[in-house]
Image (tube, rainbow, N blue to C red; front, side, top):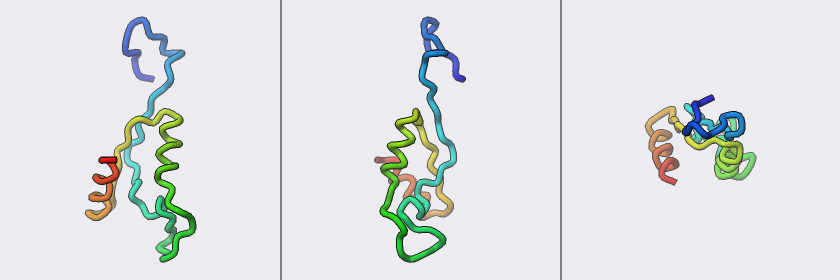
Length: 80
């Protein structure tokens, strides 16, 4: 656990903060596509995924891309 930000802060009662490093939020699965199928199996759910992560304390994401196209998409996602 990170050190408290002030000497009066109690680390036992402070809500933990998390950073997820190395997530590929540009992967087609977040748009509903699995196993290279051309039809989605569910509606895009990236907003719900981000909301759930935020609700449990994730505050920072290191968004990755597996190629140039996904890396550009990662930059656009990070701007949101």
